[in-house]
Length: 461
Image 1 (spheres, rainbow, N blue to C red):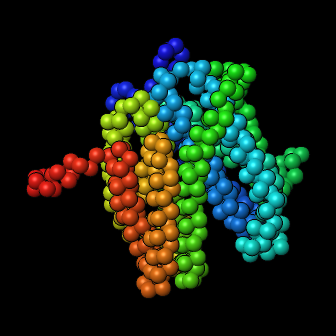
Image 2 (image 1 turned 60 degrees about the vertical axis):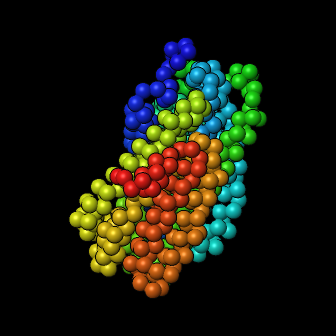
C-alpha cells in the first residue's frame, strides 16, 4: 500500500490466501449473527407461547428486510473493492468512501425502518396474527425499527472493510454485537434488579441497545484509526458513490430478498401436507442455515477478491478466484452429503419432538444435501458477478431459480409425491442454479469454459 499504514491489497499473492483472509473471519461473524435469532427463540419460549408465536410472525419480515440491507452491503463492497483495485488502495480515498457508505446505509436503514413501522399492524393482520400475538409482535417492532438504521450503517462500514481485505474487523463487530445482544436478552425479557420483565418488548430493547452500541463503537474505532473521515472534503463525490452503490446494491438487495420469499412459498406447499411436514421442513432448514455458513462466508470473501482484481485489470486472478470457490463449494457439498447420509436422523430428532416431523426432517437433510453444493455455487457466483458489475445477472439467476424451478416444482411435487417432491424440487433448483452460474460467469469473463469445449471436441480427458 502507498503509505504503508494498512495492507488491503488482495491483488497479489496466492488467490487461496486472499480468499481465506476474507472468508475465514466471516464464518465466525455469520455464526455470531445467526446465534442471536436462536437465542431470541430460546428465551422467548420460556417467556410464554404468545411471545414465541409473536417472534415467529416477526422473524420472516425482518429476515427479508435484513436481506435487502445485506444486498446493499454487497453493492457497497463491489463498488469499493473495484475502486481500491483501480486506485492502489489509497487510505485517504478509502476513508472518503467509508463515509459515503455510512451515509448511504444510514439513509437506507431509516427509510426502510420507517416504512416497516408504519405498515407493521397491517402486515401482521394479513399474516393472520391473533390480537394477543399481534400486540406482542407490535411491542417488538418499534425497538427493532429504531435499531435498524444503526445495523445497516454498521453493515455499510463493514462492507468497506471487507472490500479492503479487513474482514476481521467486520467479524469482530458482528460477534461482539451478537454476544452483547444475547447477554442483554434475559435481563430485559425476564427482568433483573430494577429492570422489569418485558417479554417480547424486552427482546426488542436488547436488540436496539446491542446494535446501537455496536455501531457507535465501530464508528469511533474507524475515526480513531483513520479508516473513516468526516472532513468536509470527504463529501466530494457523494452523489457518484450513491449512484454506483445503488446500481449494484439495488439488484443485489432484491436478489437477497428473493430467497426468503421463496422459502415462505415453499413452506406453504409443505402446509398442504400437514403440520408435521411444516415442522420437519422448518427444522431441516434451520439446520441447513448453519451448514451453509462456510459457503456464505466464501460468498463474502470472493466479492472483494474479484472486485479488486477486476479494478486492477487482473482478470485471470478474478477467474482463478471464481473457479476456486466453485470447487470449494463442490467439495464441501460432497462432504456434507456424505456426513448427512448418516447423521440426518440424529440431527432431525434434536431439532424436533420426534415422530413424523423428525421423519420429514431426516428426508430433507439426507436427500436435500445432495444439492447443497449448488446453493453454495449460486451465492458465490452472485457475489462474483456483483463485484464484476453484473448485479442484474445475479438477480436474474436467483429469481429464475425460485420462480421457474423451486416454487412451482415444490407445489407440483407436494401434490404428486408428497414431502419427497418438495425435497426433489430443492435439489433440481440448485442444479439449475449451477448450470446458470457456469453460463453467466463464463459470459461475464469470470470463468473460461472454452477449454472444456475444446477438450470435448478433441475427445481428450
